[in-house]
View 1 (cartoon, rainbow, N blue to C red):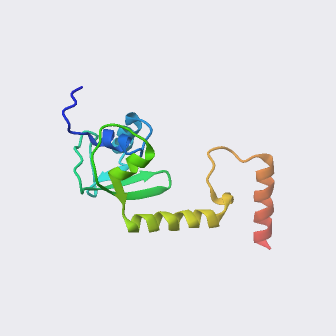
View 2: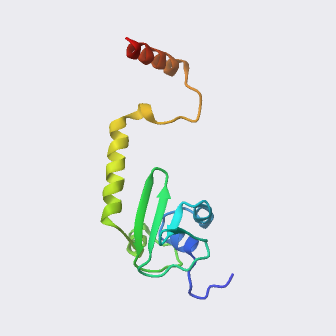
View 3: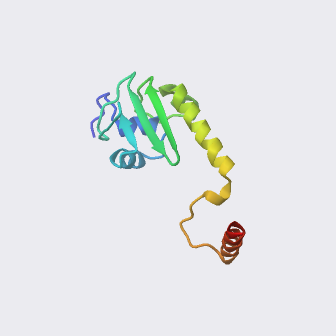
Length: 131
């Protein structure tokens, strides 16, 4: 592996602490969860200062502008100096988080079958709606 001073996008995302490993960063890029200048990209793309990235992580989508390049993963305070999140992105994330919080825990989609207690609650709710 040559380290000639030109970082790859997956390595920059790892160094900026968006992902725990380079493998996760690479998988996110290949899966279309990272867009570079509004378009899908490859993990080997060379990021440049001033470029814009859209990064989707779970429910959140961040739009960040690259402020500095690094190929070394350091502490979180130093990693936050590598990018700046746009004001619109921050507002959009906070609004989405508030909506999720207001919706309550009942609207989260579960990946398993409901328990007996949850089934009773569902039936009770449906009966109340039918009246």
